[in-house]
Image (cartoon, rainbow, N blue to C red; front, side, top):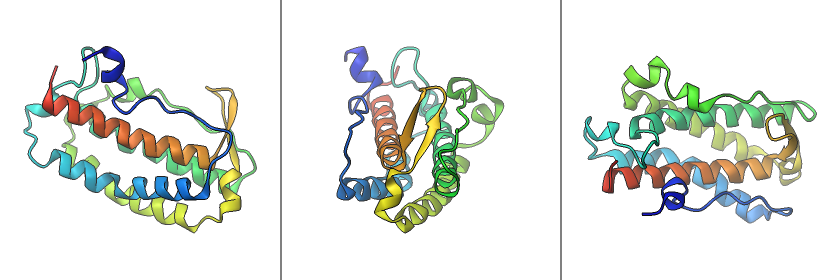
Length: 176
């Protein structure tokens, strides 16, 4: 399998200028359903398989599982800041460094799965409570040096979850 497909099993995220309310609602549903999809994908994975990689020099399944709630906690906070402040500047984080910290190495993955379930319940309830006019509110991402709307961000996090489901599926079927 070529490296680009291993890196981006569902393709790269593509921003648009206009988002339909119906697609934003679908993305919110993706966010709500991700914990269950991840749990189903992992139900027969062994402890040894958790240390398999989805590509050469890529993260292990274990790292990906811990990364998803790390990333999505940041997303949830970014969305809440954007609703409660005017164009807040968010705080980026070094995900590649976070993926090497001790909690990722030693905490059982079921802890991150439980965290993801709780987080996604709160996040999806929050997102479903928003009026469509609020989707256009923006935060400033200093790393990307641009404003990102809540609707674009919801799409990115929907994509992010499906992207990592693809990584895990690849690592289970064709480990490195």
